[in-house]
Length: 311
Image (cartoon, rainbow, N blue to C red; front, top):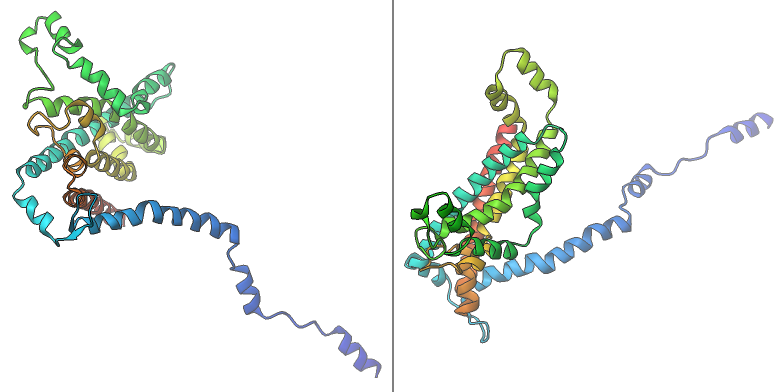
């Protein structure tokens, strides 16, 4: 009897089922769910649902007052014969190439010049980044004063003996678009510079030292060391540039309103004037869909290629 009692008392207690303990360990806390679901709900209400409504309105004829009338793809067929749409599309492509290309090149160049920690270098970084914090409308008003016939630009040209170049920059069809690109570019370079500065800080200096020991010159180190290390930053910069180019509106509308004679018209300004001045919200929504498709196509194609190269 004593032996039997000892055996019973030393036997281990039954362990709880593993499955029940595993389910309890994997349970997500309610606070975490709230932090995830509440922003997702706000995003769905304020972004996704209006976007879906925009796609639907692009298939309708609507003046903003009466009930929308479903017209199918008629708005998109109308674009094929719309001369203003063709001009706005060409100007948008030109804006993307000039504004995007120059902001990327100049932003990278300034980042390379200002990446070294030297005395007073922070002043130059802040000075180049300062235009980013300004309102685009305020920036446009300043540049509008510069471009006036008696403005700073023409006075400077006259003072240096180039009075033959004096020009009504915003009133000429040949120069209006390029004159508008300058203030937008002036603002964008500082933003791109900051992105590239962050990328350059993440490059291991030992890579440059090893390349220098192997006899690589500055251009070879930039091409074979710096650029490959900036691949992820290039993807971010491209996405930002494409999105900013296709949604550029403030500076163009403040300076020229798309004129003269649609010479500086972009898809964004044409969409706004069509929807809210001509009250053709269906056709304006179709233009917005075209802008979305262009932005998504350019960014998605680049990201797919970048991910394939990374693999």
